[in-house]
Each structure stands twice: as C-alpha cells, then as structure tokens.
Image (cartoon, rainbow, N blue to C red):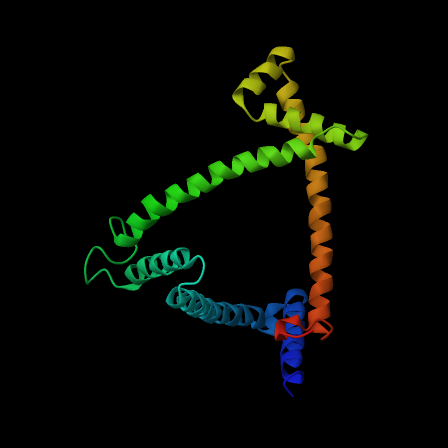
Length: 218
C-alpha cells in the first residue's frame, strides 16, 4: 500500500498533464492549471520543510561545537535575520517588510549583493583556468574550439569588434550571423532536443512506476 498509492498518484497526475496538453481545455476541464496550483502549494510546504531541516542540522552542530560550527552559526543568523524582517508587516515599522530602507532591503543591497559580486569575480579566475585546460589545441576538434572561442570572445568586446571592423567592415555581422546565429544555435538546439528526450524518458519512467527514487528507495 505504501508503494502503490504514490505510484498511482504519480501515474494519474502525469496522465492528466499529458491529456490536458493535447485535448481541448474547454472539453477536458482546467485540470492542468489545478495541478500546477497544487504543485505550487506543495513546493511552498517543501520549502518550509527545507528551512526546518537546515535549522535542525546546523543547530545540532553549533550546540556540539563541531568542526566548522562558526560557519553554521553564521548561516543560522543570516537565515533568521533575512527571513524574520521580511515577513513582519510594514505597519509595525518601516524597518520591516521588503520595501526600500527596510532591514531586508539593507541586507540584500549591501552584504548579499557584495558577496555575490565577490563570488562571481573569483569564479572568473576558475573559468579562465578551466578554459586554458579545455582550449589546448591537441586535436583538430580542440583547435576548432580554440579558434572559435577566440573569435567569439574578441567579437564580444569593443576592442575586438573594432579590430574586426578595421579588417573588414562586415566581419562583425558575419560572425553574428554564421557563428552565433548558425553554428551556435544549431548546437544549442541539439542540446535542447537531447535534454527534452531525456526528460521525456525520465517522466515516462516515473509515470509507469519504473523510477521510484522520489519515494526514497530504488
């Protein structure tokens, strides 16, 4: 019973979404929208469950002073400092809520935004290191990748665009048309088609009860 009920719910939900996509909603009913609303409600409860789980796991480590407890304590402080002022109504004080000048706005604008900028600035060095290892021209394919990457990177900056324009005035437009709008789009569509086929196969496995990892077991 514990296995049959979740599998039946997954099968009926998936079947209803498929039928709602292909059939006329006036005749079939607005089941798709109803299911999406239920999915949003369930996602809200799972988000709350995730917050409770994070608090329990990290608070246990903080109480026992485990390794890295200071970082987990900072996580808990940041979690409550961001969450509590954002859910308190602004009628209590202009410091609450998510409006301009509130505690939430200050935390998001100054500490959070600056840390995100620092993180992306550090990632640039890792990306450059990975690009150096990936673009080494050891094979014909790697050489084509290296040449294409250099052309695209130069084309995306004003200095490179001016350089290409000085060689031939229509060269930037040719790169945009044939490299970005031709080869790049074709590769992206291939990746999207492959991802869609993989998602469809996984969905069918879930609907038919073959894939049951969502129940916490194989």
